[in-house]
Image (cartoon, rainbow, N blue to C red):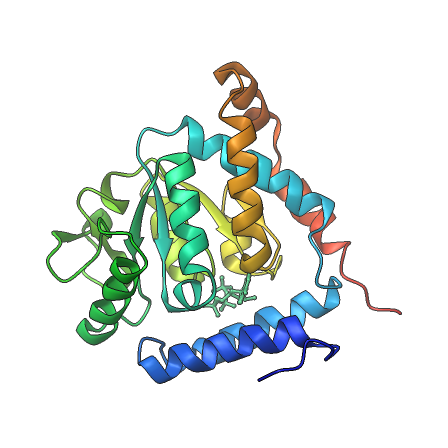
Length: 245
Ligand code: ATP
């Protein structure tokens, strides 16, 4: 039990979630390292949601609301940290959820799909029973996708994604949104909208934004998406990193 008064309470709570997920057997060995890299960047931005991240979130939600077949891609880390919050966001923007693992094993897929079911979400894609095919005919586990999900999606939210996979998705013509605390990662640079924020702050905030933007005209949402410059926003995100006290 971590005392609430601990100065690193929130951060330790997230570590505990990661440790519990590892014990349940659905994280790859490298998941903790990826989490640690995220933690380091979060430390440097003061563990707060910055203005460029908020701007990117508005655009991301607008893009999801404008899409015909939006999909939220989930991996082990995302599930460990924001399983319920992803389900809420999916409901708010009318998106599907698909399991998409860098190191896909039947065992991990089984545990993660059961977890979403236990949390009340029955329609999870990318399961062992799903029709999994390859994007762009690349016969590689990085290119797998559910036929009715990522394969036919127009917009995909791929949080905490690896650069190879993001590149394959981008090359297959998808509109890519990422949540990644590292503004220098290949995924952040390759995406159409990159949200430099901790996923635990970003996803609930995006659900709130969705409640608001759903009532807006389509023209307003389109303008938000067209006016956004991801490269410029990433530069501003990078400037939020504090190297001095
Ligand atoms: P790339 O291949 O895109 O250059 P990478 O090699 O760092 O990046 P991974 O380690 O596969 O890719 O992805 C993990 C990414 O997710 C890292 O950039 C890390 O900063 C980020 N990350 C980890 N935990 C969180 C979190 N809680 N919220 C947001 N981002 C996170």
